[in-house]
Length: 125
Image 1 (cartoon, helix red, strand yellow):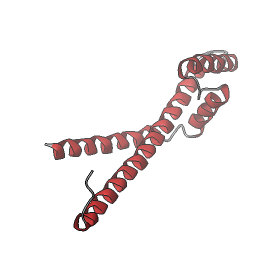
Image 2 (cartoon, rainbow, N blue to C red; image 1 turned 90 degrees about the vertical axis):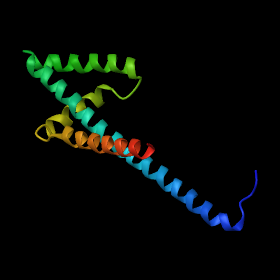
Image 3 (cartoon, rainbow, N blue to C red; image 1 turned 45 degrees about the vertical axis):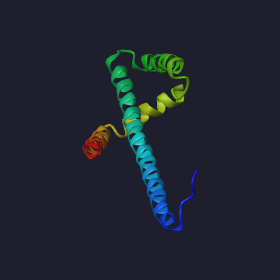
């Protein structure tokens, strides 16, 4: 490969640095979006557990059995992340924040992502 001349080295450094900044920014935003989405997902899992428990008559017995079975089945499918302790924490997370609309934050994130994708698609045309 031909080496860059001195005149193009500065231009190369500028494009190189710009690409690094672009990729680093995209990765940071990806982590933020995933964190927001997973927070909303865990809140929703907790909500569903609580609502299922409240629908049964023997709440305490249902709760323990529900957590046990969900843990087994979800870990079988996803391999990790759904221990009994984690599911209980998701339940408590929902109970503590049940009046906060966490999912609205995530829907806002999706709107921003849609806008960015639209702008990106338009810039390609």
